[in-house]
Image (cartoon, rainbow, N blue to C red; front, side, top):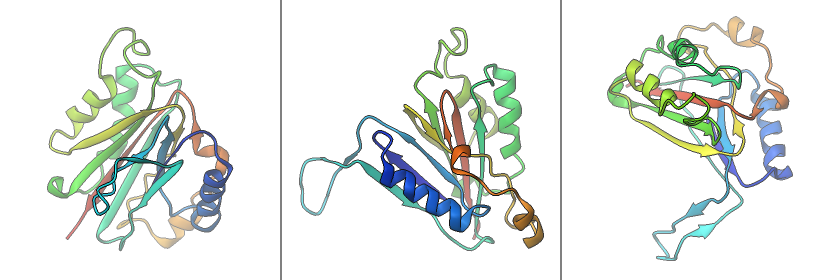
Length: 186
């Protein structure tokens, strides 16, 4: 799983995502977004926050111990019922709630007005399905992600290789939300 944030549509960041898709197309989960600013506090140097143009984090591990599923709420999914149905696709993950967490990246436009005055639709539906799993998230100006629903412990090598390869155009979105559910098994 690669968590990726950058400011603006930077060619070096897009190139990095292209390379990930080229080498790991059916095996990589990418989530992230385009944000206004990225700040990082260097504890060792006790400096004030530094601003970077791109930042990322990679989570890797044995398929037996790291299970990741991800869904994309496209722009046409605009009702509470549609959100809940799509989120149910994450429900089949075998997870240890103590060792799981969710990540949500949403378009800044998918708030209260998107849902006709209803607040917190997406995160409250996540919470109703996964009440004990912490959820962290951001609002962005462009979302990066794709559906990834293989259960790594059950999917055969044949299933993995027959899964359609993800193209660069399939990971950049607008007016969407991406949810990742990450679970560690010991």
